[in-house]
Length: 277
Image 1 (tube, rainbow, N blue to C red):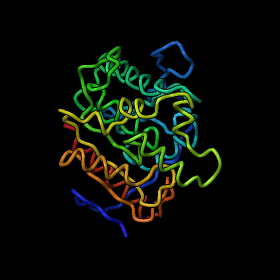
Image 2 (image 1 turned 90 degrees about the vertical axis):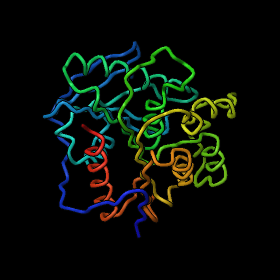
Image 3 (image 1 turned 135 degrees about the horizontal axis):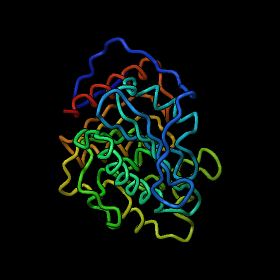
Image 4 (image 1 turned 180 degrees about the vertical axis):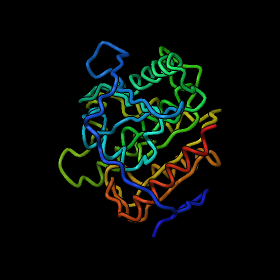
């Protein structure tokens, strides 16, 4: 059974777009590290969609096949949009690099989109897992303590696919469940000597919601063993009417049924269209 609150999903035919490795993106640098780069794929409209890969902030790459295919599976109209895929620094004890990288990358994207005459009024930022957390941090960056890459133009909306919203609670959940050794990626990212309370306060989207006008779609499965479903509930309570939550009953961390995948595709497509002028 699939639970949907706030809005109704209308089912209609869709198609799956296979990965096309022959299409080479334009790469844009926004820093000195080899990971601080953005891939740009030109679309058929002036609308902009930004994608941020996951990997627990510890691993992953913007061109990794698994993340390209996951993106294309759920974003069925991606060829119509100008896609920016953000790379960022990952690894053990590297927090808050990933957060600061995606915020700086977003500023670079605004500059690049302006030069390309794309619509900076029509930008949606999306991500999955740690990428969902980072997408939210981009949307909430006006309340982030480091203003080095502050950008006046905010995204129109965020698509958060089972992203972390409260870091300390996620860490506690991982410590409690421990379905295999060393599964607490939160502690891996922040480092064993770091202050979990302070980092959670500064880097958790749930604490950065004040005076933010932002439409957010969250998709989360109730049986997710990597990011607890309660993370979505916390965001739903914090954002109220600005939040749309699609709950996948029994869904895991990308372990969705064909039926759920189809509803996710159409939900994302409808949400994007409703937030573009």
